[in-house]
Amino acid sequence: MKSISKYIWFDGKFVSEDKAKVPVTTHAIHYGTSIFEGIRAYWNSENLFVFRLNEHIKRFRNSGKYYNILLRFSDAEIKNAVINLCKKNKIKKSCYIRPFYFVGQYGINLHVTKKAPTHAAMFSFPFGDLFNKNGISTCISKWKKFSDISTPTQAKMGGNYLNSILATQDAKSRGFDEAILLDRFGDVSEAPGENIFVVKNNNLITPPLSSSALDGITRNSIISFSKEIKLKAKIRKISKAELLNADEIFLSGTAAEVTPVTKIEREKIGSGEPGPITIKIMNSYSNIVMNKNKKYAKWLTAVY
Image 1: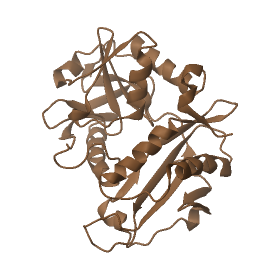
Image 2: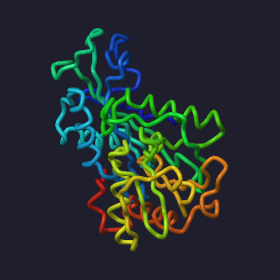
Image 3: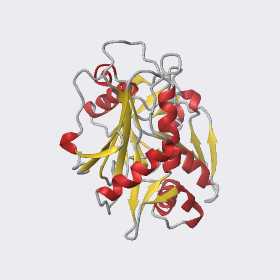
Image 4: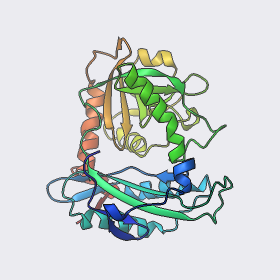
């Protein structure tokens, strides 16, 4: 990880990195009882803009509700903390912001209730491209995406991401950049940290939430602005076979933004280069987050 912010927001106060510590008896360390978000802020040479901050905060709070893990700060307090974190650290470059909250000292008790002690923190660090925007190679993971019959798929909860870690380890060990996970029925779900879109006959297709896909904020943004660039987005199940017959494929996520998939295992997708629709989506997304498309300025929160 690139150097994290000098100051960290911890339980309502700004402290230096060396002061942001928790005991080894912290429940979240043992059981993964933590909730997190990934947020991006973009510097356009004039101001720093946080992308879809309100939507991130809403999901941040809702994730904890699945597990009776309480965020003991209001939405307004979290919003101010994000903005002031950037100001306190004098950030004037694009960055990634990681807020999280977790169960503190609670023994080995598995009965987590709303009375369990929780703490909240956030930090940031400079961030550019997660993947090569000229296209990445992927594989179908040997691991399946977990479903709602085992744990809530819409919660960005620390323990849930062990599934993503396993899929990433699998992909990297086989020489690929990223994994694609199938759901328990064998249909396409998502990547370890991204949603997936297939382009076929000028239509955008992305799996439904019932395929264990996260209700991604970048995913929803693409679905929203696709109409403006004369594309039709469809939400439906996608078979494994459809992936290999796609005209184009791309991943979407806060960290990944819009990332072209040019290869699945030994098979090229389309021409083996980022396709025209993917490039169109990439450019539209970039214009929005950089505040070049005023129609979507409502999605941006200015820091300065």
